[in-house]
Length: 576
Image (cartoon, rainbow, N blue to C red):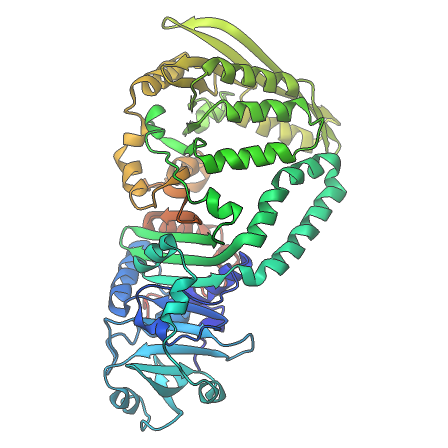
């Protein structure tokens, strides 16, 4: 029988689980284009749609071949297996939707050229609700007109549902322009009502907050005080959520979008412009493990920072005050964590020996002062964990040296671990040394033409490279590989990050074997049209390498979830 979207097998089933886990319990759908949504009831409990069956099949096949994924399983594979089937319109849209929470209360809408030919070629006669074979499974089917057949694994569900049509305008009204654009360009999309789960979300958040405050004490309470207004506004104002998936031979792009009530505070925050453009040009172009940029100049981001600061209790600690001052004295920045070698880490150079940051600022002196105050506030802090005490010591020396004619400040952070000299303490100290370096974390600060540069190690060559990029551009943002990934992600970004998976895994090459070159994973946070979104692009090479490592460690069955347990001898490929 058909599993449809109630199934947890295959891609679409996993999408449904992911959406529910994020609080996007799928509800009234919305879309500007596909005809199929005109038939989807306004009160449908969930919907997953395919814009164009033939195009989606070609894109998914190209992605699977490049990623070496043998099969998707579930509903998506089922429907794509019938794209060239008798009387199926391969150039039209299709959808799955839920009528309720009970098992079997789901319906699949398939575009057909001739309903009678569609049914009779699959064992039916073309009258009323009847059973046929579709994609190798038994299903009940009936005609709903407008060039569509409806199928379900429960005959009573089909008999009880009477399609009305004319629902597209209502669906479109629940969407914003940004979500509509994202959906139109995707192969597969999921639409959901965040508002429908606001009550459940609030209850879960309050429970999490209470638990954290019980164990975390005043520090946890202070942390929640800063984010409470944002969480409350989100729960009150978030309306429609959208997840889109666009497949291609060079990767898959996923976008998660959330639209807010017109006139609400968050709607206003996410209506403005943000841009990280050019910020990664200001850090050196080098092989990297992580690279990121942020824009805090937009009114929306500034409002969020102000809201957090205003929500913090009076008498907040000096370190928090200093960090807020640091954030408000910069309008954006970028960071690159160059990939260290295992040798550099084992000799005590630390994981950040090749790392640098750029902070855009009209007042470099104020930024440096905020840095100095933040370090001073952290000096001498002690935390206790599992029988060990961690004491932080910090230093900040203005005008400590001159490098290539530039006067630079020097900063440093060291952590001393005290406690019983057992294996756990030794492992903690070893890990601390590998990450922070044998002399602790430290580096240089220097003013650039339009801000401040900072190195994460006392590496004069890195400082010189950082100043060159900050002053003249032409840095990492111009890298062809990074630019190619960036071009697949949406604009109006407040934040972007790239993860060099191959460089990070390369640190453990002695244990993992040779790691092939891979494009970085790209992640952005963006907004526009009263909508906030997070987008991700991941290449087939990364997925293939992940599957290979999963097989190596014998963990793919536990990591992949339902539908991801592949047998070594399974070389049959997808059913379509």
